Length: 177
Image 1 (cartoon, rainbow, N blue to C red):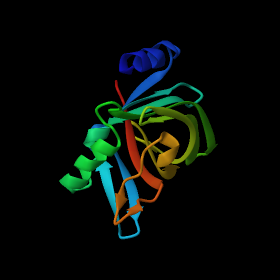
Image 2 (cartoon, helix red, strand yellow; image 1 turned 135 degrees about the vertical axis):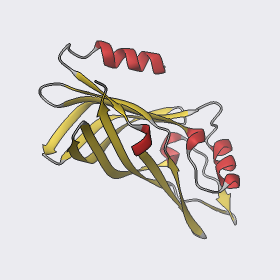
Image 3 (cartoon, rainbow, N blue to C red; image 1 turned 60 degrees about the vertical axis):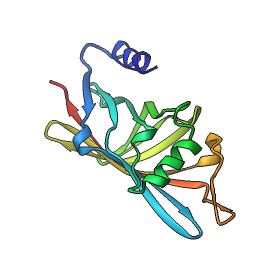
Image 4 (cartoon, rainbow, N blue to C red; image 1 turned 90 degrees about the horizontal axis):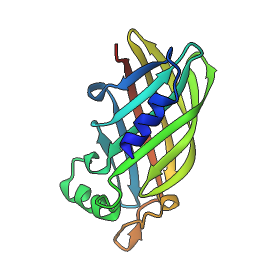
């Protein structure tokens, strides 16, 4: 699937399009989850991604990460999350968009597909857009319901965790030239 997505992005862009790669060192996604007894978060700093720009602007974006690379700083919690999320069967979370709307010079909306736990759902994500010397940076927050992706919510003290998961992202795309 990784090769197909990459091939799709490369083949569907014009010769004048510029491809930018996600900078793994300066990009991160953080999830926030809650239970009535406590809240926690985990981060992912090993993301992969591509963006395609042409003379009109940003045309496509694809970001993915391995579920195993989310780190909550609690090995027991992370191990249990891998079981709950069936990471061996569904090892990645992915987002792809080719419908990008520029709201103003600093905001964009990505309408695309979020793939998580083997389920693909349409998702619109608003982001702050900041041009940099050699690319651009996207940052923002969105949320989703874990049960929309058929995740069986784990329980603690006979109470399931909250269904709503919040995602914060800071993605830095750099020119490949």
